[in-house]
Picture 1 (spheres, rainbow, N blue to C red):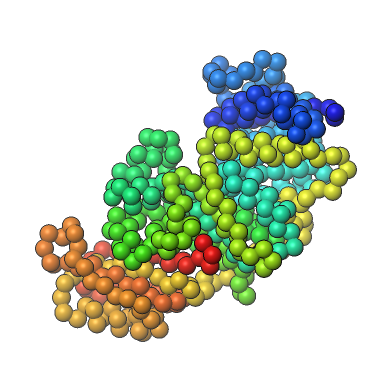
Picture 2 (cartoon, one colour):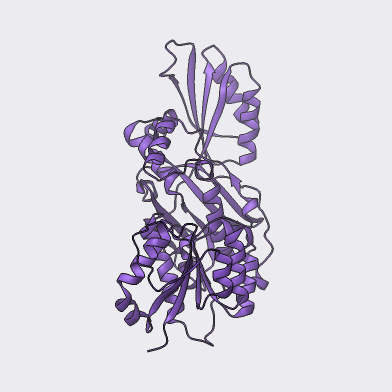
Length: 440
């Protein structure tokens, strides 16, 4: 049997502690499966005195992760601290500079400088694995980087943030407000004290940017994503979607068009009977559409200590099974030097149409005016429904719900802007895209 693979772990939070526990409790099984033992020989964390419920006897402690990466007697550096810069960035660079293999779950770091880190790893002949950075325990990185080689991918999309999916699920199934569901998610540990990064779509955007590069062989472009979160989704939207046969999900979508790559993160209505609509709670789902395989949907735990640790361990096991001198799979599927420049495409005609909710004064001529603004922008309407607002108390205000046929983003925005200029509109319009997945 080959010499043991020596692992150093920076970050002993929920994921790091779970990883240590799994490796130590399943040491014999891992040695047989990988053909060599996996040993944790060094760790780093903020508080050495904290009881994490793990045995660190005989493990070298480093107060600074950068020092662990630069000096520890290890083969693999595992970064589980998080953050797009600072210690995470510095320590990963230090490890790669030594030619050490690196495993990380840090999507923010990869979204910011993944191409640069990939270039360093490839120059040094090191592996940089990051399965846990996107969709937790779902092996979507391996699928895109290795299993789908030879396929031409046209679209990647999915539910990639468990916090948002949990909130939307609770709103629908229990009739709770966004605020109440968010507070409950924070109490249960699904959402941070400051949940902005999750609920405004930034977390999903980082993950989508990584998947886009793997799918289409372009530079990572996290700043080129159209971004909307779920903070403006109301219980009224949830009920209206249900009445129309849809559920609302926060989707990240990347697709290749003739004009370039389109990346977008936003609330989306999906048919109630589609598979992706049935993905509830903190579960994630990623769909891939390609020319040879067709459609692939992967569903599983998207977060949590055990799910993320499982993905990290899978990356470590891959390194343990690899052999010196063997051909390395490029970090981002395509060699870093060969990644194409990112070209952002205009958001094209949306095949599923749009849901538009308007609160208006209840007076003569409103329907006609709205229809005229739509016609002026060449928008065909599938349906238009008027209903009394449940919270109005009188018939002074009405809610008008429009569902359009396929049209362009630009046309919808112009029509909505024209309606906003009218005196009958109350508050802000709500616009949600409708997706009709091909197979799911």
